[in-house]
Image (cartoon, rainbow, N blue to C red; front, side, top):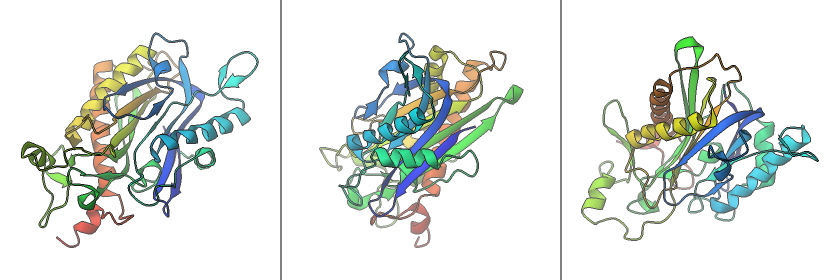
Length: 314
């Protein structure tokens, strides 16, 4: 369902990911974290004029990385896609970023050329996961500082519902807290101790964490469906999808995280519908699954070990 492209800089340890919908998709967004870095999110509210977007960009580089959306706009404008403003078409490209400047080269940030290259690389087959695109510099479990962090990453998951309705999620996991397997309750990743992961909740409860937690965190997601949704329904879908984030990341939506989930309805046929409660519940499921996949497929980079490498030593 998703046309996804990555730009990856493994030397600077950063990158960006674009979800393209050139023909337009009804979109919504829900910003839950208290340290977000975003672009063009206000227009996604139901009361506002523009109904469709043409791409969503997720990027590293902190606020600097928002500039990669300019390259996505250039790609779309060259091909004649965008909101018809009369004298020209303006591509609508909401964006959100993670803070990854503390890993790799702090001067390496995705810019317009990176956004353009991500568009050129888009595909809907065999989309790469792990330490790639916007997930390249992602890290998690930072309550004890970056020296105890574990590598985060990008994951994708999908489910097929009745009437061949599909709901998918792409998530970049860069959280302050732990990643939990929702099926077992086991901690998959978090701050590293001498003999395993240390619970972030316990660190916070005992007051042992960094008092001024660095704003180096954020989990970003894009939920897509082929069901026909209104703008208001797309916003509700984004809201419900956050439940999956809260199930798999503990704690979530903190003052030090900028958690954002976008929702896209690619459906053009009003007959292709599904109960919104069901769709939202399944969106939460695929978000949680995508978070787990992102952690399990991440690779060690920038001196931060990935879970799959730590398991070799445990």
